[in-house]
Image (cartoon, rainbow, N blue to C red; front, side):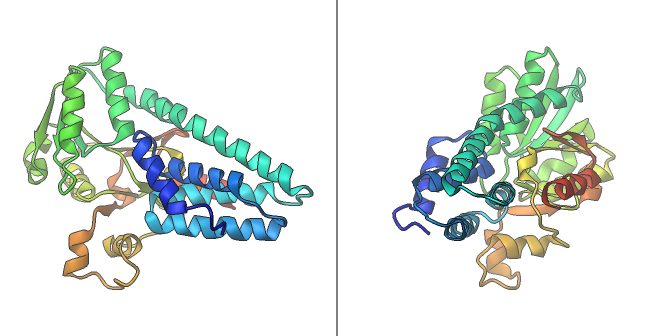
Amino acid sequence: MEEQFDIQKTFNEIVEKEKTVSLPVVAVKVLTEFIKQGKTSTLQEFMKNLQNASETLKALNPISVSAGCDLFLRFITRTTHDVTNLELCKKHIVEKGEQFIEQSQIRRHNIAELGVQFIKDDSTILIHSYSRVVMLLLLNASKAKKRFRVYVTEARPSTNGQRAVDELNEANIPAKLILDAAVGFIIGKVDMVMVGAEGVVENGGIINQIGTYQIAVVAKAANKPFYAVTESYKFVRIFPLNQYDVVSSTLDSNNHEPNEISLEKQTVDYTPPEYISLLFTDLGVLTPSGVSDELIKWYY
């Protein structure tokens, strides 16, 4: 790996500077910049350095960043097949990386437009924490003259729910903050649940801020639709069998078994596909089973 390029520093700087950018896109930004600044003379060295950079990034966030890294590396593997000119190949990869970054905002807007049709007048929506794409969907629905109300979980320990409430109220969308423990109490007044995702796994389940799973369980018990709103570049090739597979993939690798200390640090949980009604994505409206079909197209 090129010593003069600090992967973690670059990642942190982009996250701090571009707060509206999703982590998979940040990962692609970092890898694209890494290629620009890297100096290699052989394809083998180029691929080795890039793989090392990717592994460094994945350690920063095993879910969202891994999705971006895997997607980018898969494209590179295809591009370098039968390569004859390394510099022209690198130039092509950088151009494609920059194109992906530019299109990421368009993808989010397309998802938001797609989801608006599912919001009916006078409906009540429950959202969890703060999701950029869910917020954009709700703002677009308001601009489309849809009338609706929103309940927002406070989403401890992050308490990002308050940020969502403030932005919704500022846009004249009625929104109220509720305790995480009040989901069961409020679900009878709700017409649908909408959540974002940090990652979408192979079976169509989602990994998202902790508390998402219990909201999904309550929604299913109350027969309320549960929608995941997410970009396709968050599709990730992992297949958790239970919550503790997620614990082991997102905490320090030394924590081989879930324990009281590690669980206190857990910030995400896994919602199995049977609790998800539909996923709104830039690939269209998908059932959970449709996610594996898309991953097969990409990687196999």
